[in-house]
Image (cartoon, rainbow, N blue to C red; front, side, top):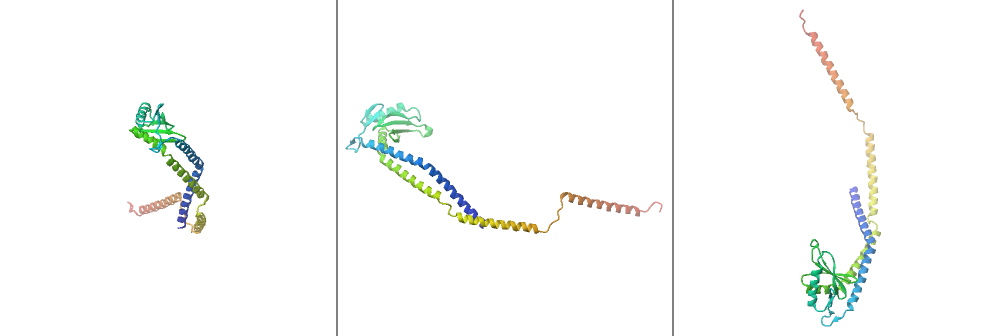
Length: 256
């Protein structure tokens, strides 16, 4: 019973230690991860300031549409969609290689054709201080809307990164607390292990004493048994020989 309790406590102790190792790993990686989020926030805010300076269409309540495709500026969506499609079809011929197409709202625009083994399709990247990605479809008029959505959702992106950073910092604090706290049942484990050791030593001592005081049993080795067996066979042979001689003496002779 006691040994089962010790085993269970040792399992819990190992689980606690494994958790401590995981938390120590998180603590080690924290500075780099925190800096990554901080840098992303700074870059997103830089891009947001750029977007805030764009002229606003009073009817659409959005920045005035403007895109440059292969050096040509377009403000008409229909013409821009056609030029965008032609540029992608002509330029994006090598898989997994970003190709610069032009600019959208002052952000360099590149398109990547993905290998079919990686799912295929096209991805557009608007390279500001922070890279903004969006998948492209077959309709390039809709792809222009995807570019806008990719940029104009920047407030949501900032909020997401802020949430990730806050969660990372909370996890870091929790990890520090876990590492600082010892195994809650460490004292209980120590006491029961000592008690188990004492009982085990007592049992081993009693077993040794019992063995020491037990009556000795005669031991016959293999060769001794063989020797005894040989002696018995010899005695039987002698008796058989004596009986044979007696029979010879009692037989009637010819002269009788």
